[in-house]
Length: 366
View 1: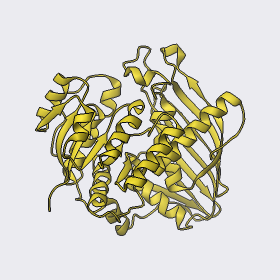
View 2: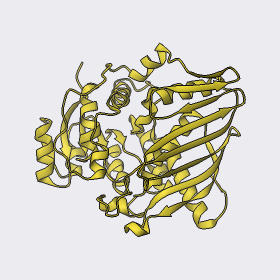
View 3: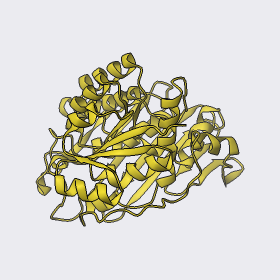
């Protein structure tokens, strides 16, 4: 069977997250696209990628089957629309776009073109999150009542930041709400249900020279009646993550590890991981725990180094394996796939939180 060919656009996350997973799941990575020719050529040579270019249009005009867009959110819409028009299958990094209108345009275009379209929401492929979804959706904890999701990081804790310029600006698509919590919002949709309304705020990191936010906090209600809150900051020196889902009959607690702790009247125990769910998360691809290839030398900034590890590699292989399966079979589906429709959904919630801050009221997520 011929390997599907793919171009990767972006030399930071594109190199640290996508290339090795794409190869492990059966893709032939033929092209790397970056802004700086010297850096792009160096990293392409490290991975033995034959084409190192600085033109997105050239990648679109090439004979690749698919394109991965791992660039800042402000470039997603123009890049993706060109790729869709050329019939290329697409993975797009989060946040999907800068606004709801752009996200809806991309969703509609991808659906009309009939291409495989995915958002790189790799946390769906972590076994604890997939197990949490199954337990909630199967009724194992009863009707969801209350949800709390919290994620703190050190990215903006230092007094002098070494972040990409776009990440520092709201108009460039930067900030913690958009760049981490696109994942968090998507996870709650995946596990529990759709957001109905939100009320909250973000904190612009003005003392760090940012117009984008470094913290978010908002309450929400869901279509299924559950209520809850999401909070997070990238100003802490003590990273922390937890998701707690309380149901009418039992509760779940998820964190950094693969364990899902279920609590009920009998006590707290680790929920068992079914074999069929592990198979589902392979998505037709191989079972690989760690990459064979090493990363190239990357910048020593907190932003780049945050993404320069092997953590989550097997989950990315699951995601890219699902992409390959969808390309080969247009009818292929997997519950862990986040499509452009899911990308539109997370942009709607982000937009509603930002509107709530400006207008000081609850905002319906339409």
